[in-house]
Image 1 (cartoon, rainbow, N blue to C red):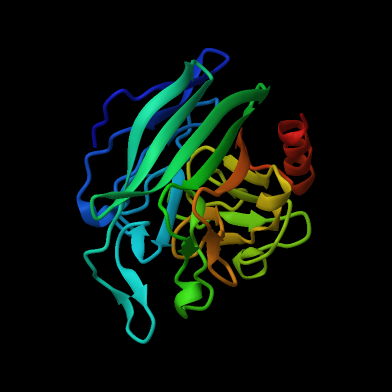
Image 2: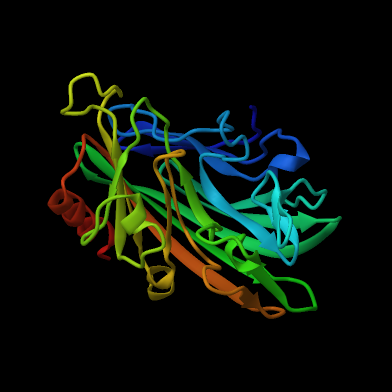
Length: 292
């Protein structure tokens, strides 16, 4: 994997994430700019890029499996009545230009292209902020504008008939370890309870375990929080048993329409911490990260 013009995010002088603007990937993986590797302040990597289980998972970024029939997620497309199907319908996100580049932040414009035409124009705003000596926050906002002359809509496998598969939006592919990570919100524990829930925040924690022989390296925790009313309305997509990943669901119960010239805006703030945080510790760091 190589990239061109890939800035590095830094917190307190330490590199914590690289933004790959032009990943060299086959079309079926829906190439798109992404953050990888992302690390804790102690240097523990908390992302994966093109893992063997899902080669189309690319670190941290925005991916949508259905933009008016075009696949911007990668891999197979879920077809009603057929199931996951290999189609030649893959789109690609193309880095256009940086509007801002600083050691701890950048603003980038992207074109969402399919079949030789632009469907969406994205303004992506990303910042890395120090919270404590062992935690920092990745503030990631994106605005998707329909640049065509016709209505567009965003969908998911769930809106095509696959229950429980409403993925599409901001997505964080976490590191896979010998043991599955734990997941919790302020009120629920475990994948079954958290997946599909609407909650202010969701935490994924792995690595060092209190259970002897459980495996895993240094402890780490990710706490994803919706930072706007619209984002907090989106349910969470969560996987821990099959693979570790968390994201938001732009099209959970129904397709999300974007009329010509209109814009959909979402903002996720993720606490990236060393160690396995408790519920109270996660909540406290989220408040610090999201509070203006």
